[in-house]
Length: 146
Image (cartoon, rainbow, N blue to C red; front, side, top):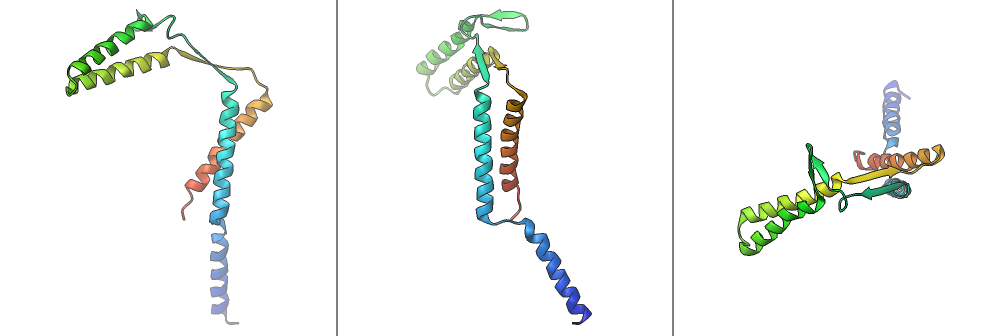
């Protein structure tokens, strides 16, 4: 065997080894579905450990020291409904209605509290591995260049 043939064979062999990181579509599908299952299971178990409280209809909320009862955020929405029915083609009425809807959504979000229930360290680590391990597997498949 000539030296040049040996170098060509070695070059081909090296490139063949560097391509071993590419995987078959079936393996990628398995990684993606496995990662998706892990992510969904982790988020499900996490959602079982979180309590959500909302005080929207009882206390209202404060903006820069001004206390606003929760029912008062409905007033701009009612005005927007009336304006929209009086003048349905008016762009300002649609914009006002959108802003009133955003105020209601923001006020509900601002008065919502999340509380994490007590869990063991094993449960916490399991949740983190399922959520972020599954996300990592999904990103590995999605970010792989083909």
